[in-house]
Amino acid sequence: ITIVSRVIDGKIEILQQVRKSHPSFGKVGVPGGVVLKGELIESAATRKLKHETGLDATFKLLGNERRMMYKSGELFSDLIFPIVYADTYSGELIVDTDFGHNMWVPINQAIKNESSEFDSIRSIAVVLKAIKNGTIEKLPVFFNEEIQAC
Image 1: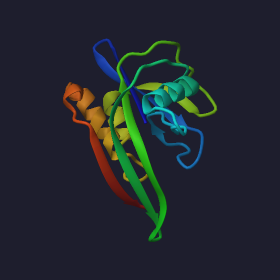
Image 2 (image 1 turned 90 degrees about the vertical axis):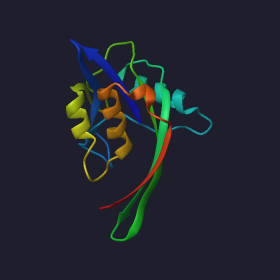
Image 3 (image 1 turned 120 degrees about the vertical axis):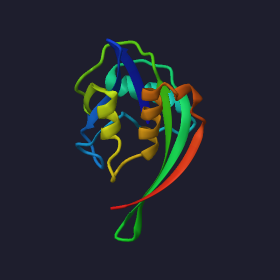
């Protein structure tokens, strides 16, 4: 999970994407992707960000969230999501890619987008609130486990 912020005219914005692939088709949220076997988490984030948005950034690992989703009482998905953050980037944003429609949104809208009850990584909203409150540097490294039913 790649969280990238910027400040424009004193206002914090977060890079978000309307996803074009399943299982999260149409969901608005921060970009993410798969860490390849043997790849460092921060390197995977840099690779995925460049591939999906055209931007370059150096990330810091903030923590991990394990999300277990149950459908009709059966385990449907069990994944661990590393969450990384960058507040500086370079390059020109590619608005539309095969992965999604990329855009900068105000931080309050980003928090709202990441706070849905279903198909959400709850730690993202926690990180966004820390960015908004100026406490991101004080956020301890975390590992959370969430269970969701669909």
